[in-house]
Length: 500
Ligand SMILES: O=C(O)CCC(=O)C(=O)O
Ligand SMILES: [Fe+2]
Image 1 (spheres, rainbow, N blue to C red):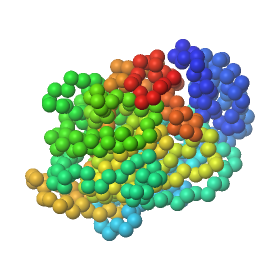
Image 2: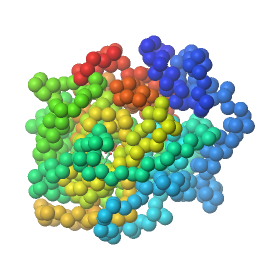
Image 3: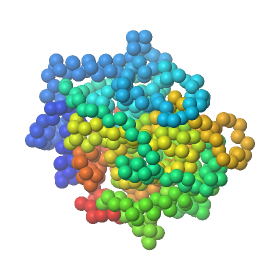
């Protein structure tokens, strides 16, 4: 257990029990397996798996999983030139919502119609519930993903997936709920602000970003032994105050800002983004004064000049309804636990979708509720503390969208169609106590990712751990490194509350 403090045995047990197939063995058996594996949860899980699954059952599980991932007969000969994941992964009926319409949309035929749903290479929002639970925690599978590499030799499927439970419990599904601003407040840990920027600034910023987006790139990562990419373009910005930001650590952080992939150096906030950022920062800091805070949140005070500060921003461009981003929660590696993220929408209206993550102890007892929040031009969603831990969010694809009718003409000539674009800017605070040089590295010598463990029902009970993230970018191969975050031992803070 060299990498893990002794008092975190509970955490290791929790992680281990999340890795093994049901029925979960008792604590003593888990503990035994951990001790025999020198505290390596993955080795312990593998050992338990070998013991617990009778060989006939193993065959059945592999068969089910194989079937799930099997290419269609026309694609079965390798090497394959192109993989249509539609043939590979069929969503359940109620999970096909990754392609849908905005309620009340005027059904404009924008260019997304050029790509019909039958030809989209989409990994569904989530495959069958049981199988989606099966995705290894090391690999936060993004839900809308386009395979861009041919199928590689497969890894043993039981290493990647957990088996579906033998008798899936039948729990009534909840219909998605569309929320307006006051309902957002009631049902989610988010706030929807309308008309946040002066109208002329909002339009100008939209045009600047939509024009720049022609040079942005989609994100790519490894999923099930192949490279996939998200159907939208993205770019990363770091803020420079007065052209002289003394804290250059974000430069390094930005190198790994998304999915552990080393990226180009960040761009500097353009002046319009800086102007918008100052408005957004005020809104966020006002909200922090009134909200109930969590002990592990950033505890720097405004009086000491250490308030929440948007020092970086990730920007996304969705061009037409075929673009989107799958269900995910934002990486906390540099944001720390319980981050606040402020997400500005410009351009055409899209749906921002939230879905609750059911804590392990309520698994099988109730269904997650899905919330749809239409985000119009010049609106801000503040994802307050606990949103990343308790919910996942996405921008679903839509068959039809309304074209953006800006109230002001473009401030400069634009030689491409941008009225079907939505620009999103997520302003984020990279905490000084989570600087990249303090990020533990795994056995692959790659900076770890910070993850939350949802074992506890209450947000206060959520624990955090560092995990290998190499697999997402490194040919799908990583190590089983897990280390519980030790706030004091790692010298982190200030926090809002006392931390153990
Ligand atoms: O476009 C949006 O509103 C969401 C973007 C997002 O989730 C992200 O950048 O992490
Ligand atoms: Fe996100």
